[in-house]
Image 1: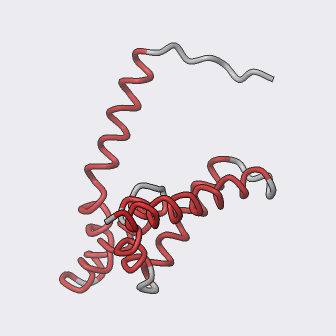
Image 2 (image 1 turned 90 degrees about the horizontal axis):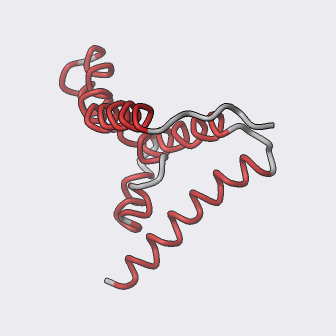
Length: 121
């Protein structure tokens, strides 16, 4: 059981390190970095490589943003097998709708409670 914690720490840390390197070394914006990591998670799931990573690292692979790309692709592929092309569209939202809804709701609450500060140069 302890080895699972070690793998979760290592895999999650490597994913976060890649994101930080993209921002620091490649000088990408957080939005670009986020998009790249989501697409990488989707590609890894499409190639069948993300599920073994989840089996190995558990939360180390399911908590980072790459897991969102995995969820989108996984849901789209599962529903496409059942319903064809329309399943590609509905499957993505069926699997990720609770996360998207939570992000919208909590973002609204945070924006309502806290005063936004302008960009500081």
